[in-house]
Length: 138
Image (cartoon, rainbow, N blue to C red):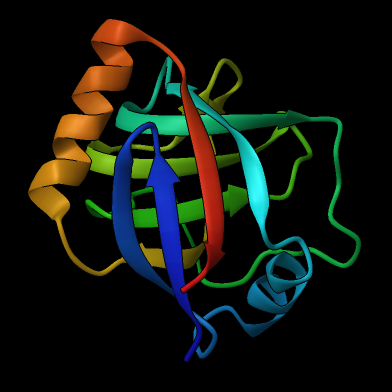
């Protein structure tokens, strides 16, 4: 199991790669570590933050362990297609969607602790704006 450290703004969250459930997605993502970007609040999906990746594509990324209803602390990657590629992080109730309708993404990371603080991070992004993101091996 690969443990991760996710830093959003000034908060740090322990997480793990879901290598048994999404082995191909996790193998692709591990090559991108450390992953740096920003999170912004979702527009259609509910209580989540996201990383828009636009026309980016991760070579070999296909659907696996995909869902439209991630639980708090679950992180999905949408491989692109009818909407832009993106990463979405559920801090509360989420029904993953875009302007073209419902989407499904690969659940490949789970935040393993500090879920109350993860919820507060999401609310802070909602009310205060974009925050820096760093995902690295722990």
